[in-house]
Length: 177
Image (cartoon, rainbow, N blue to C red):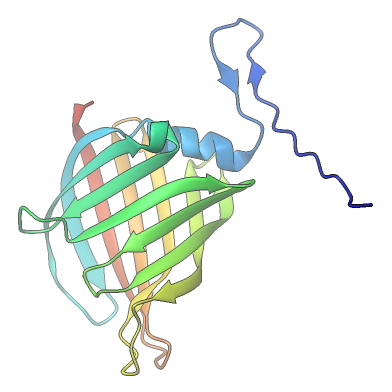
């Protein structure tokens, strides 16, 4: 006889009947990410060996019926330099990052601080790496400081190096979708 497994996800209507109360911190933070939909502008700044800085544009959009959030970052051109897709997997908040370095790290949120509106992600695995040990995103942090301000940090390292580079991006909403 095969065992039967039942999975239940409880989505509750708030007491005033105006919306839903999400069950997990991952669900609640994902809802914050969904609210980023629109156009953003700001700056990027590198540290840890690199010194580049400059303007950045970003767009956030929903896909898959609202079950995934697409983040596109534009640094100096009309084509996105990097894109990330956020989604829920079981009870985890996940992200796949498509980097200009031709790598595709998959990350999961390992810490969500709801009071600080911050999620921190660690790498699960990476595709697109090479024998030369091209640097790629190993850690990621996002903070939705308020509905119209956002900070993100990419931490890059290579498998064969202890060198760490951090790219900090600060964004402000310019148009809500």
